[in-house]
Amino acid sequence: MVNPSPGESPDAFLAIKLTLQSNYSFSIDIQKQDYSIEHWEGLFTANDDTIILGLNSDEPQVYSYSGNHNMLNLNGVVFTKALSNSLAGIWSSVSVSGDDKHAQDIARMDLILQPDFVFTFRVSSSEGSEAIHSGVYYTEDDHIVLLYQDGEHDATYTLDQDELTLEVEDGDMFAVLNRIR
Image: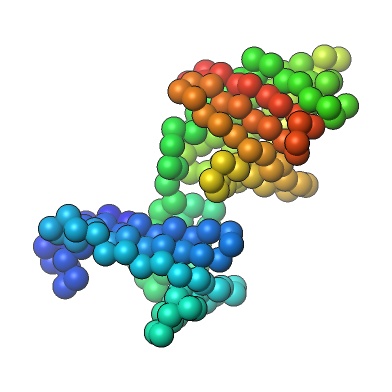
């Protein structure tokens, strides 16, 4: 979150970066007007409308929240999820291989990753059949998870400039995709 009026804020901060991990750890970095960083990290828990930060601290902080796939409203403060790398774009397969029978049937794979964490995934077989899935995705460390109405795909990824490599479940599928845009 970027402070739109840092001079008018009683805390005089420029920006706040909040990171929530799937292992229930969090970190908060507050950039002050003098560009120093105040850091806080710990454990959190959450239910449908409340999040508690700092479970392992002397003074846990309780907040109400709401959100969607790329925004979090924490007691009225809105955080927007941002990609940590240049993963967003339109990708098309150069090669698809793997031990899984379905991987061997794939002739082409296209993946659109939008910066707002919405994706479209299209797979075409050598016989001409096609499957298209749309949904939301998230990344954590070297994992990308595509969530859609009837399922999900979890893969590890590496990104080297305009080449995206996806690997699913210990070699079941291995795909190299090039950035189209």
